[in-house]
Length: 107
Image (cartoon, rainbow, N blue to C red):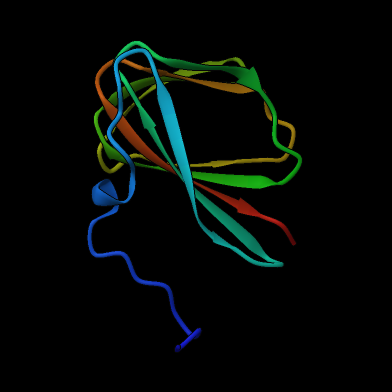
């Protein structure tokens, strides 16, 4: 098997069904430098405020969300991209069904 790349034609098909009142996740890639986790949120679900010890990248694939990034509130929709410094308090509230990719930069 060729390990020189990882390819997903459609990220939305990589998650199990998102039940009402749930958040699901799937790790798509993990090595010494990066970890990629795909999240699916039912409408109204929230990841409450937390921090990450590494630089984190968010890419919104589908849906709408309200983000809190430190003291700032922002809206996210399909196509939104966010880079967060380590230890930045943040939260995500899904306004609709939401699919979001989180990439943690380990090095």
